[in-house]
Length: 449
Ligand code: PLP
Image 1 (tube, rainbow, N blue to C red):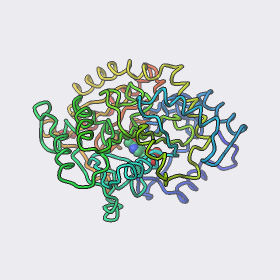
Image 2: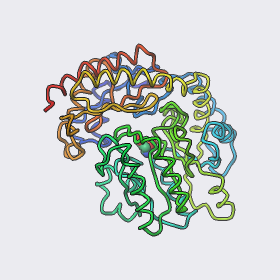
Image 3: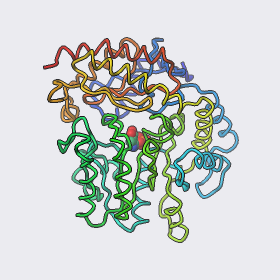
């Protein structure tokens, strides 16, 4: 057991499910696994069974479990200074800020530290609105940006619905997502000339009061949607032309996941505001970041910055951030993710060739989607978001359940899988996880029309 406790596993599970909310799921039937230990890419349950984690626990744990340097940084910070109000300077804050100047896209040099991706986005919206004096945020339909009022209102996927119509008051409007596999405006790349970006420009021209455009550079949960190379540079140009800020939500795509420190680097585009969380500490402690350009930061030299949290720039979250970045550099994890990409792609293309139920595989670095289709010609998925929201059993969950029973944790979402192991994953582990998915995709093949 990783903690001193007299509770039995049955008590742990029963107390958890009867007293806690099981996030984004029906309470009924929630039967959580009791995890007691973990090391590198492996998780152990109370029965002593081990699992290969092919999801990095919500795409967070890039360093894997039990990284000694990160653990030591937490212990040391707890002894040195557990907490200080946000208005103070602390060594932990200065050390991390110094490193961020090194690894973030150049020009992003003013930082606001939060405790999650959700509140990093809330900070971004507020900063964008205060700076521009405008209100509207253009987000895109297939997107996720967080769970509090502003960030859920900016979330394009149906997780937003539970907040409507109140969420509508947040001033968010939606553009079509970039999704070349299932284009929402029925175009085909490259003949389309990136019409989805043109449509976004059309929106800016026809709306008043637009403060910012918000994008996940590679859409995460909603299917690892990689935009064509022309999209981000085009969007940057449009934003500059109309004086609209570009916010990149790199909560999932940051920290080496896509083979660059930050995904926007794939296209040489620097956003005005970048938000991130998850991999910033490899999830050892809860830390989020809203980084802005110097120009935006300068605005607040003589404008009141009406934003903050008690736990903002909490020293216990910042010291492990520094240790995480140092470990990523020591282990060359960004390069490692980039180097693995051609191999993962080759294996996934082979899986697609073998399984009629696989419609598309796409991704970068160690961040890939395997997208299932009922019919390769129509590209119709096996399940939709409506199925998920209504609690209908999903085919991807059935397949992920088979993989889990054989010791591999794979993230399934509506009608695709996300392949995102810790960046320390070995080739043998990669093969094991992909072999497991390969084996159980036969369940979907049998249902292809
Ligand atoms: N933005 C993106 C792209 C995310 O993937 C997530 C979470 O998965 C969030 C924001 C919200 O971050 P958090 O769950 O840390 O609040």
